[in-house]
Image 1 (cartoon, each protein chain N blue to C red):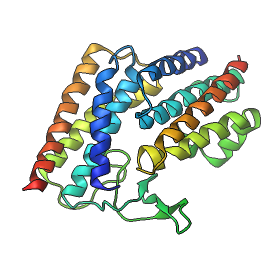
Image 2 (tube, rainbow over the protein chains, first blue to last red):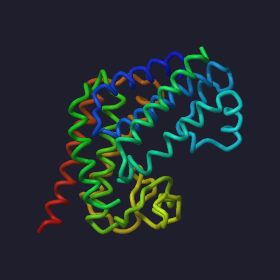
Image 3 (cartoon, each protein chain N blue to C red):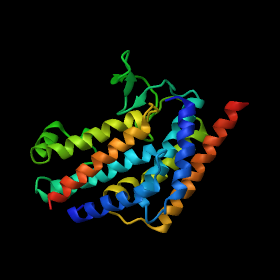
Image 4 (cartoon, rainbow over the protein chains, first blue to last red):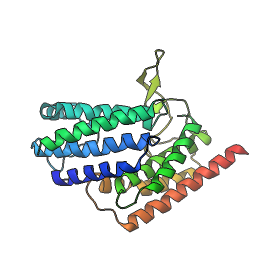
Length: 121
Length: 151
């Protein structure tokens, strides 16, 4: 996908988040992961470090050396995305207490990711 | 994860998916549908005694988050428990026909995941209808197993 399409999808997901309430922590975390990943691809394409056909899906699925390469240009954005990913097993696929707070953290990380991605162009 | 937690998530996510506009909010409507469906699949696996309902949480096949003595969680190797997607990991053994039907219904939903969520393919009313029908099948199979477990 091209950077503009990634931005549009990320922003649509962010708008849809308005439907979710405090008790919908699973989808708040998942929305942060989905929108954050589109923002990451937007930024990496804008930096010219990844091709449009080489979108990342999950940071955890990246080859280590590819993650290292991308982290040269967007270390904090990718760290934030990785932190969102780490919330998923416990609060989305798991039932650990604290889902609402985890969702708040995920959304704060998404805001940081969006700000950084917009700076990329 | 234990069955009551799967059922609680299925119930809450099923309610949430009704609040989204399936086309305007397609990404979250779809993801909520898929996540609810995966909880139904795991609950059905556990009720049919195909997989463990131990309170550990799936990451990649064979690796689960497990509570440690100090209350933190760490990755550990585990046998068959929750799956993250249909066939990831595959479930060995004699899988009953209703669960195969549930898997096929979930696959009918999942096939739109990458095209519509990650590759920019525009959702259509027909895709929404297909997903809705498949989700009804998912809910029906889960209901069948829940009823069976109460007999």
